[in-house]
Length: 484
Image (cartoon, rainbow, N blue to C red; front, side, top):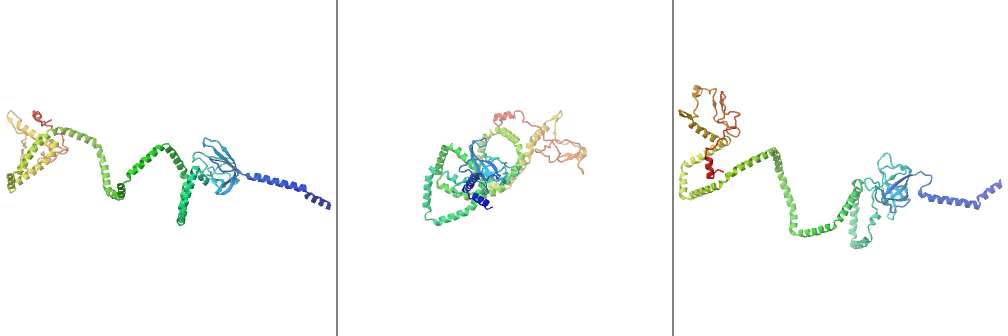
């Protein structure tokens, strides 16, 4: 028994065995350290391919994070040629993620971010809210030229921003920083106050930047549109330069004290204009109502214009005798003026003022005006005076073999109409005030009905006889120049 134990102990203390075990352990450690960067062996993972427009400084085995927590790593970074969806070369990343993330939502977005100011980048995943079928194991999230279809979100890191400072900018920038150092020298208090104000500004500024960073606001499209606009303006740069030069000349011409005075008076003018417009609102409202009320009459304007044109055309020949009439009136007015200046005439008018002749003349003129105002509608619409004169003349001249007679003599009807009775005759027709205007012409147009009719006859025609001047009158007027 002692010999067997000694033999086993000698075997474990053998240098050959110890060396062999040590070499095997070291080899296993080297193998595990070699493959550990691609994940532990025999541990299931979830792999997804993503396409990025630029994989600059994004290395193999770089972190993949969600909300700042590491959830996987990048296994490979491979270049890819342009496609129809993205007409530029791009990089495809193969990600190894935790199996608990399978499957990612199909609307997952991602972006490349800076790990620290010392360098290094990682890929940040932003899973979307879409439920249901997601990205399968080995699936791909694509990049597209259309921002609405691309899964990659644009992100500008500090190194990208500093990359714009090339050799042409670094020298002027260095001088600007040196001048800034001189500018802030000895102004520690003001600088501290400025930094305090900036610290207070950071909160609202972060809210503004959050709004600008929201994909729904399409701020990236605004930047792209501004870039396209700048590219379009580059082709017309000489014209734009000439425009700016001419504008400088124009503004130089406007640099006058009168312009400043005008600008100083603008607030008062605006206030006065506001007061006037406020006071004009009732008038404008009434004008609008008047326009609405006049709208139905707009249809009558063409017919009215045609009739007015006919009146003007008919009245134009009348203006021919006006110069002769004006000269005669001028002579009459001159004679009247001479009469008014004559002292004897003044004495006569003074004497007339003391008796009733002037009062009688004024009353006569007033009565004549009243008669003319009453007779004007009847004459214009029904030709009353001309018809009366024509009929009166006819009544005095017509007759038979026994002689002429007055056709207007009343017809006596016994005692019914010729003598005084307690009531009018049952067949009496009499109209003391016939309607003579544009609506009716009753005088001479009443129809005898055999029944009593006293007063206006309803529905009387407006048609009257046409009259013409006696033969030869128009010819004599034309020779005298009074008729066209």
